[in-house]
Length: 231
Image (cartoon, rainbow, N blue to C red):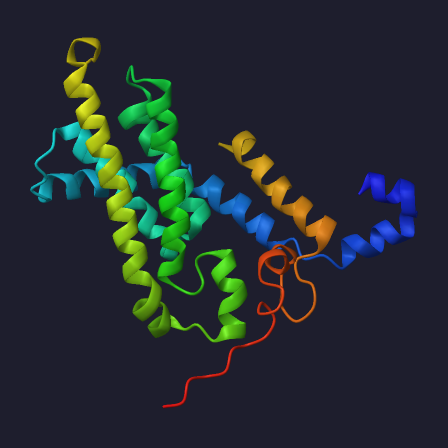
């Protein structure tokens, strides 16, 4: 905003700021802070631990816990939003995996898998992921449509993705067993500022409910609803 005020004048900078909607960045910031609080982490951890004990998973305790964190928590984003699911997954993996003497590559893979799964899990409903939310109103994607065409595929992909990483980790620890041991305001502010910067620079919407990033890869279809199939 300071750069805009310097280049275009204070009046245009104020007009730009007043016409932008920064509710989403503020919400993301708030939900990430709440998800990182001790009570939320304690409740989420207790639920995951209880599920681990209830399910007959043929895995060691730590691997079973990691698998649940990679496969279960990402599916919660349709209820608690992607931001909260990412925060919970990262903080819970910190104690289950990152605090242990594990290779850096495996740690990067472990943190990348839930982020991918959470993005996929956003297609479980028409309101969890911003890309789906942008198109849901235009294309009339309701809950029944998402369940029929997207949700089951997303759930399957999340499970396969999480299982693949756990199997890789199990093979690594078995092969190199002698090298293995037994098996947030400041952090979230950059996320809020990043999203707020996108809103300020390019606007949240550009004509007809079509976001700026959407136009880059589907310019002809993003803002027009497809014809309904004849019954």
